[in-house]
View 1 (cartoon, rainbow, N blue to C red):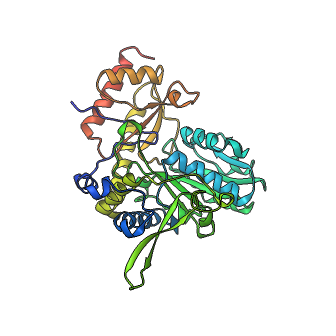
View 2: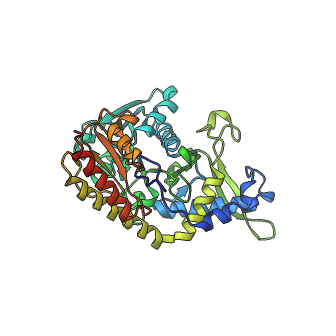
View 3: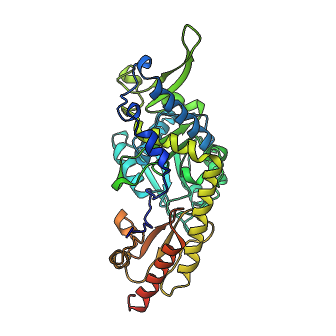
Length: 386
């Protein structure tokens, strides 16, 4: 029997078309090496170029790199970029930013002596007033997650405007699967957009390997980490692909390097390219709508079960926080014994919330699976758990 997975927190169980596996398993993609020599790597370079083009369109940003290791490393690099560009040393984010990403960013940037200020959210929303109290001319960037870690969809326009008014960059962590139903971060005024690309045709795989998506404005492109593939013509006028920009110290003067990121996630990015090609804008919208409908259904039903509390109101995408009777770990164990992975207990990721459970819904969850979850939740309560 298949175990339905309601876990998320940055890693999601989406449907992957068989064609993604079939094409990505071809030998020229599986065995491809780092494309330093364009004359022998045109296929790899073309796939990366197509990947960059699709990511730019997805997020409404002018420039994308060839991918980074994962969403957490992409955020860490974005913060390093903001520090290099502004020469400032303060970063403001909120508890609605993925806590795992925050830990990665703080660890990677420890030598930069960057100060991180965390804003406590109200009702799960990244409020304008909370950020405004901390914003000043010493702030390099604010970090916003959209939809945020709790699945809440915030109105970020006023926060973005306020940050730009003091010369701070705006880094937006987003979800590629939400781009079919939400306004793209580039249209909100983001300077840097980062995301975890795992949902784009890559399996959960027990936590990796994944790929980080990274976009920025034209003004910041010289500080972008990793590599960028461009298109050109050879002496005979034929179209060709080359590594146009590499900011690693291996390729340029060490004092000019902006990052030591040494490679992109080639195979993962290749799979993401095939996935985006197959589902297209219409498919992305349909998946987003399916996720939203399922999340709304589960929120409504769980709120009607005694002892289950949903602390965050308003529109959500795919994910929501519920506080369960007893502890989240006890509820998770109860459900796991009955072959359901009920969500991610917040206590596992460092949050001081023993009752908090983050529940994720993708288009792969069926009505039967959701109703089974609800039936077990009722049994959990009637069985005396509190």
